[in-house]
Image (cartoon, rainbow, N blue to C red; front, top):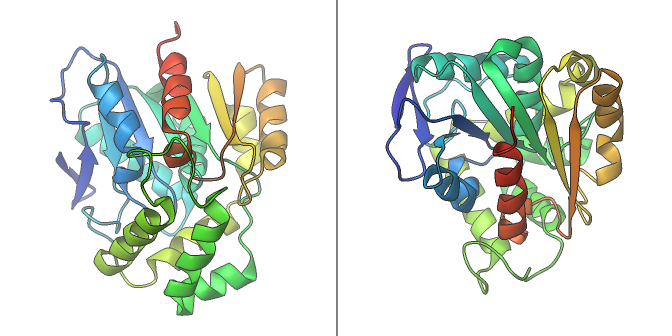
Length: 273
C-alpha cells in the first residue's frame, strides 16, 4: 500500500490481505537499515487471521521516500501521520530494535492512538559504539559485517525464516545492502545516531498507559536482555501491565525464532483490551 505521508510517498506492506475497515490494526516498525520485509512471516499470519497490517518502510528506506528523519521523536510523529493517511484511529505498535524506541515514543506521546505495544530486542539507552557509528558513516560494508556478526547467535539457526537451511547472515547482508543502495546517503549512520542520541526512554516508559510486551533474545549481543530492565521497571512503576518473553535467539528474533516470535506476538495481540 502506498500512502501520502507529510507530502511524500510512504510504503506499508499489508500482509497480502486487503484492508478491512472493521478489523483491528497492527503496525510493524523495523530497525536500523532494514525495511518491512523483516516481518514477512509475522505480518502474513496477522493479516490472514483477523487483523489489518501496516508493515512500514520508514522514511528514506527502500520504497518510502525521504528525507530520512533524524530523531526518534520525528519518526514517532511520522508514524502518527502514517496512521492519519491510512485513516486508522488506533493501532497496536510492534517494533524491533530502533523500531522499539519509535513505538515507545509514539505510544507515550499519542496515547489515544495506541492500543498496545510490543518491543522486540529493546534497550535503553540504546547506545551505539563509536566504532560502529564511524563505520556506518564512512565504511558501510564494514558496518554491515559488524551488525551481521552481532545480530545472529549462530551461523545456522534452526528453525529459521523463511525456512530451515536459509543463510540468515547472507539474507540480512543483502537486505542492508539493498537499503543502502535504494536509500539516501548516510542512512545507516542516521538510524544509528538517532538510537544513540535518544534520551527520553525512561520518561516515555513512565508515561505509557497501554499494555506492553517485551520480547528478548537470550543470546542477543546488541540489546542484551539486561539492557531493557530499566525500561521495564519504569513501566511497572507507572502501573502498566508488562509481559516479558525470553527466546533462545540473538538480536534477529524474527528470523532466528520466527514461529516462537509469531506465537508470542499473536497471543499478545489477541488478549482482551
